[in-house]
Length: 222
Image 1 (cartoon, rainbow, N blue to C red):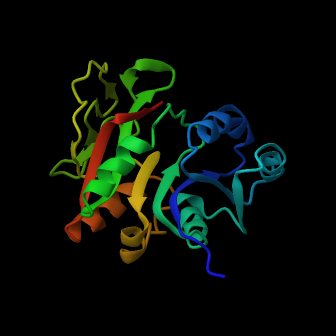
Image 2 (tube, helix red, strand yellow):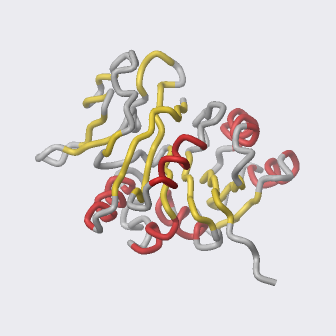
Image 3 (cartoon, one colour):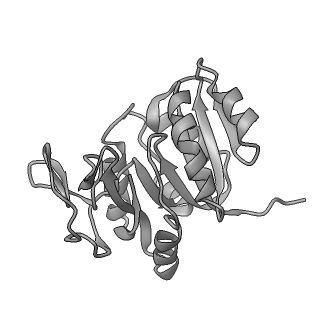
């Protein structure tokens, strides 16, 4: 019998991050009732896989044969998931209640939106934006990436100045919503990037196909 496609697959890539899973996976599972949560493990040796299997029976586990980094790790895992939307999320992100629905509603409303991110605040200083993505990424004519809320190492206070849903150049890989059809169409993440900058490259290729990349700050994470 043919299996039903998942609407939303939330996928945490893990490598020896048991302590992060212990801290943040309970909240992620609790606030992701409308999604199927996966942990994609990059050949961990710290007991991460058994921890998830023993404590989170609703979480599906994919075990990669080696630590191929962020790009290969996700590419290998996502090939095994049949979903409309992939949500790639770091294991050290704390999600908030209803973090999924604002972005999924926005993407459902416009099929040209291939990717989107929430507003991300600093976990340790919750009035400031997070370095990795803040409220949407851009790139200057010299190739330097920056964000609404973060330029180089300077982090702005979040005073609601970037609370508008708007088109951006790149969405952060720390919490990346992407339409699976378009992810597969452009070949997924470029595995020449072991870690870092791969989400900018992915979004650039999506934009070259005339798709939109957005930020929806009604969804926020830390």
